[in-house]
Image (cartoon, rainbow, N blue to C red; front, side, top):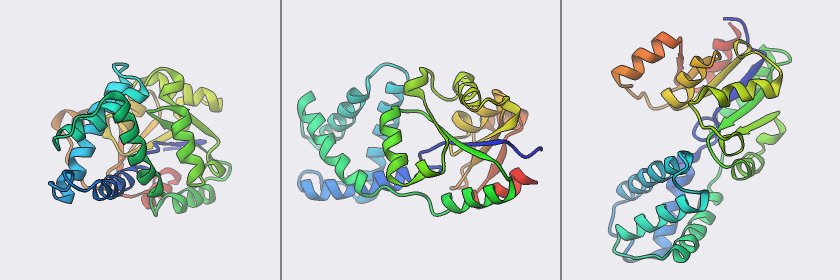
Length: 244
């Protein structure tokens, strides 16, 4: 493998510790709300909120809900599971209050900045970018909040491009932004199909960041193998992989 001219990353749960911030945010907010939100154990509470995020955020990515609509749906369904009914207006306000706790917990994964530093050392002149499924303004706010804007040259968001990962078009749009061919880029993300397989099928070097030791389905494993996807367990392993 030739060292890439551009290394592109997923944002949430690759560089940015999204799930940790979500877990901290919903637990703090539920504790502040008190009864009836204290019925579930912390693990169940977090799992429910994560499940609703997956369900409704993907409805937004598929165009079935707008950005505010998916937030309202998440708040409304979470409250309903606790016996509380929310109007759309109430749901927006509920989510806004939760969001304050989520933002307060924003951080990068510990291996994010060391990885960027080591890649820059091992691959002189390498450039960095982000490809993320989401609203551009919202994702840019995260990037700036944790200081990634000083390291990242381009932020490509599905809300701006009009297509979401794993559609090849968003990966090709990112390469075009950098003025390179797909074969000159590597893409790293925590979702095997959405990130790594999607990137590899678009002609980039696809790398799956499997922090949790997940076992992919037989179909995903076969597709990853045929696409030439590489797997790492932490970002500390990425510089040696790409610079080898």
